[in-house]
Length: 399
Image (tube, rainbow, N blue to C red; front, side):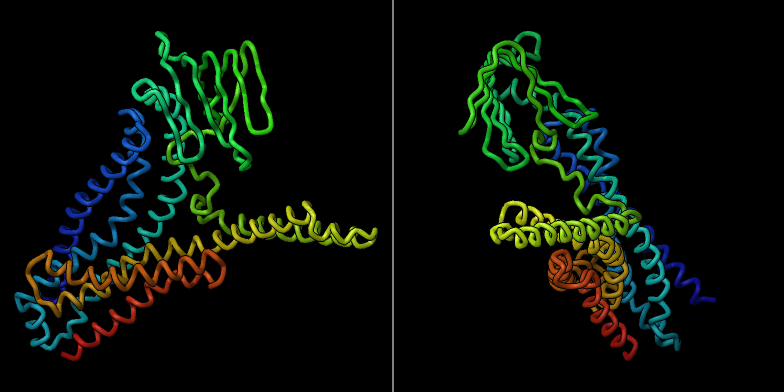
């Protein structure tokens, strides 16, 4: 009976500290994410308010493992320093009985973390992208009115001599953009222009007056009104990643992998037909012409995307279950340290985990995404922590 009470006491102490720390840590991470978007994108209060729900699951995704580790290290370090673990062992109860309930709690929390990982990647990040894209018109006008120029890392820039009294007409703008197909940059100058965002098509439409469009190969003078469109993903300061493998929910990833495999088969068949026909008519140069290069590129792109998609579920499960493995290492290590100071216990546990888990996890993730290792390589970091945690638990059991 007294053992159940003691376990409930330990679980309750960890739960209290975990929730309090989680709220604080999540708030800080959310504010950092909001401020980052505010600084890099120049978003206003309404856009920031729209961003917050999407940033929250991403913040929780990062906060859960560290917060749980802090809670278990603090509580077990304190009760070990107060000789409570020693008293339990002296009464004939193995210390593992004090540890198992919290490991069970961390296992349940890991399942929640897996769900949060899926939500953060498939709902949070695309949501952030949508808010940024839908705010780009106001963002660009705001930056142009104060700085006279706006540019992004995706090769899009606008320089103006001013903005008319209506607050929308750009005076003598010069626009430079790089097409999404990677061709040479295009320079557009005009007597006046207006920016209009089309959220349905996700394009920024530029209405030009008396414009000149120039590139290294073409120069075109267009008197009167004209229009030019640019993808919103290229007009944002950080770009967007729509269609990126990390943005697919886990429930649709398998279907998407099958589609990429079908593309590989189709491209191989087209390549085989093209090569065979070239050889049949005495044109061996067709083996290395543009059509063959295009099909080879399609095969390589589909294979790379399929590898990334196959690795994605394993990454989310491995990230989520880091909560359990952090606790598996943190609890026995805090008991061995026997420190009542929260930060000493946490720092002593977190630094070895930081040095062990993350480098091994990143190594497995890189190889799994490239397809050189199977997706299970994503669990390498957790496997290392499991070995260390079980060794520490065994050493405590023997004491």
